[in-house]
View 1 (cartoon, rainbow, N blue to C red):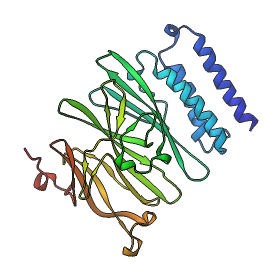
View 2 (view 1 turned 90 degrees about the vertical axis):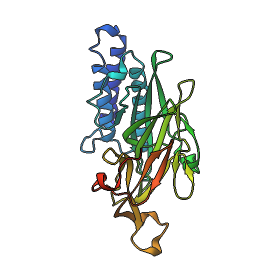
View 3 (view 1 turned 30 degrees about the vertical axis):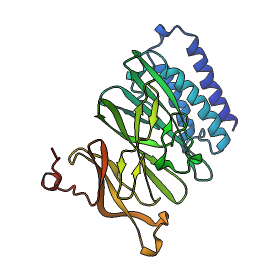
View 4 (view 1 turned 90 degrees about the horizontal axis):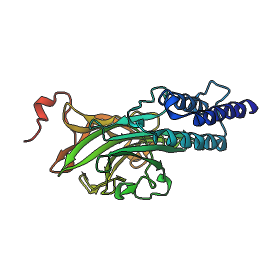
Length: 293
């Protein structure tokens, strides 16, 4: 335990020294990135003496990571810095170069997860990059598919894909995320990110039209031992995901028994809404999934 704290103290001391240097003498963001790399490895490297098993220790170290990361992202030109040394986080940038979202997660001793991150927005009106820290409040959101959320009241996830599109002159970004949920199930999440007139991020919008209702985001839950595919598929110009079914009909609603059944469903953008497409055909998209004009 002493070794853990000594290592952390040394890293923090290094960071303090780096802060005292004039910014122009720093080799861009490389020094801060090395500090963050060491801190993240202290959280996630299981074969290291620095790996922290205690939840309280993880939270304290993660607080330090958030503070350093936020300070680094608020420096000029941070938007274009790739942070390639940071292997334990999700890093996505939109094709229009207006949005970057960074996420990571902590796993706790009870099997639950909590998510952290930042949204960077290239606000063209204000001619500056603005960084927003994300606060995961998913534990207190009772009906996540029905609510619009803010960056400080966020349904946390580890994002792995972003797809941007425009509708009526406004930009939207579909986010695909993973949630470890608990010991029995994982979740996949399809969310939508946009920005209000003040340039602040908004999560959720009533655009996902299923057979039963119009949803602001979509959640799938399945057995932890199974893997679900859920992503934007360019070849069919649609969101495509595994259809989930229980192992037995008597297990309907018990998501610890759900997994892919070999078929696929999807959402396709039509007149500003993402319409549910059951049993979508993805093997030969030119035959059955020609884009409607």
